[in-house]
Length: 346
Image 1: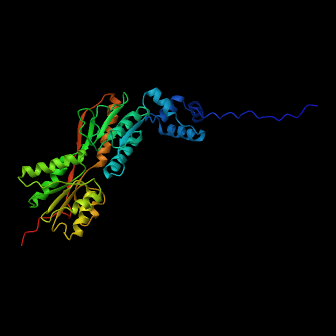
Image 2: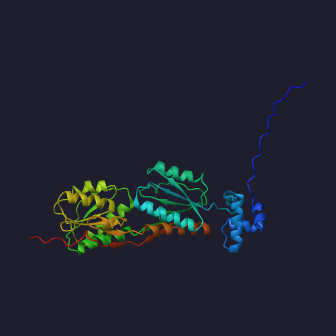
């Protein structure tokens, strides 16, 4: 009598995923038509496109983006390198980049980088391991100038907020023009000079705004007060506001967050805005109109910066040629209640 053997069931075969041919069969079209629908081609009748998409959903078919990339030589993905997401400008620019890329059928891969030379080098090195067709670099400090930075071959680049226009395509707002308009506005109101609450010394944007402030005062033959420095935060604006001398009647702050802290410090010191001190910010964040008083500031169109970045990098990808030079997005002065002529001495 034979012992009853315990049977071991053979391993179940992994279910094969639906293929392009399966979708074509269910939809009643050719595999080429399925391919065109997968690639977002406009050369498909809408009724046919709907039938193919319904078949894809029914079969659980997902287009193989890696295979498409090998076939067509593109990944339909853009990399974005940036230092932080705490900056209002960075967030709004990133939103516009993501929206513009999506409209063009591209995804984005975000690569946060530590704002050190090692951190930037590491982010660029990681690009070589990722499937991206181009990269947008949002830089705020002088770290793009190092010769050690290298990009993967054939990856096109656009840089935001940099003076690297001799090597890369750069998109920026007109920092100098905006700062000049702010300082000229205060002088035209009758203020004898304008103090400046500057951003971090290693920031391109802060340096350009400071340079414009200095140039306007010198051109007008006015006294140049010592610089006050902040780090873009409201807290640093508050600390600087405690140092503003009593004879100061006008301050140009390098961003709206520092202007907010400055307003609080002046209020605590019993100095009224704009009766005693006029204040101008920079950025025109959405809350600026709700400050007390509503803040006069320089409007930056971060959305347009993001759109131009995507347009620029896609243009390079499609033409397979790098671009150089700087494209400036205009800035505008928005006049609100935080500025007024200085009080006349009694």
